[in-house]
Amino acid sequence: MEHSLRAARVATFVYFVLNGTLVGMWVVQIPAIEDRVGISHATLGGFLVLLGVGAFIGMQVAGHLADRLGTRVVVPASGVLCSAALFLPGLPRDPWTLAGALLVFGFGNGCLDVSMNAHAVHVEKAYNRPVMSAFHATFSIGGVIAALVGAGAGMSPAATLGAAGAVGIVTALVSARGLLPSTPATATTATTAREGVQAPAAKSPTAPRRIWALAALALMIMLCEGAANDWSALHLKTVLGAPASTAAFGYGTYAATMTIGRLLTDRLSARFGPVAILRHGSAMAATGITIVALSPWIWPAFAGWALFGLGLSGCIPQLFSAAGHTDPSAAGTNVSRVAGLGYLGMLAGPAVIGWMTHLVALNHTFLLMTLLCVITAATAGILRTGSDRTRELAQSSH
Image (cartoon, rainbow, N blue to C red; front, side):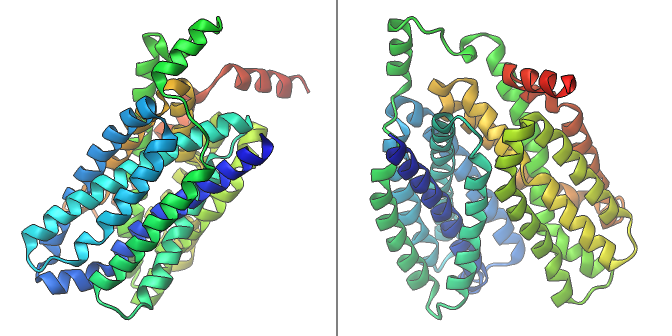
């Protein structure tokens, strides 16, 4: 049993790396594809919305299928679909074909994203300790792999994406052997009834409200992540006057501390609980982005971006984990709701900040992220469970 559980954890790591690599390979090829098709930045921005729409639809479809068919079926199928769809954006020579290709690739990406997170919930439940954040860290590692491989490939977008997709298909199929044998939701429900086990708490009318509350927090946190992705380098360049090469390290600093934080969060969550991670992490992020918004100097701004990434690093894994554990028999559906609304926040973040720059200076728009992080810290108690209350009582008694 221990060997199969370890194999399932390794397989889950592989799928997270795969997803990060596939998305990263597309991102690396964006400039070449844009030139080949002959579209403007504005048109490309509109097409990226289609990518997000496809991902959102894929998340909802995969969530329901994961609960009905089991993640052991849906995760590798989604991996194959996403890998095969990666080839499509490298082929078009006209804008509308590219739009369709991005819609399909987004759908495959959404399917893989939710199904692998649902499987990660099952792995975490089997381990009976937090392991979710480390999975999310390996997604970032996949992006680094894509940047290194894609930038040095020296081939056409079609050849590069096709080769990456082919490797992805093989990886998705081979790694499927290590996944946990999962039970569809209907069978799980029947089993618990037959064995006299109490039905999951999510069957109560209050559970959907909790899921949507988690989804609202995910939207706020991922809006902050999306804004940081697109505006961190521009902030350093346009507001603080940093050279382009220096400004690029703004995002790099944020991304590096986020990855490091996710590698450390599981141990901290096991000791202090998910409520503490979400509350103190979002408070740390609020402090960091406030420094960025108000500092007139470059080096404090770097420190602020680093603190922002470190604070945000553990927040989303806690929300996804809580959604999946609310009702393990509906883990896919619940994760899809939280991830789907969060993904909409990530898409909206850059646009919201861009719109606000018509009213105030770019650095002052970041105070919106301060507000969202403060709200998250204040409402982190939504994650509290019975075990968390026991831990808090034990700590207070010492």
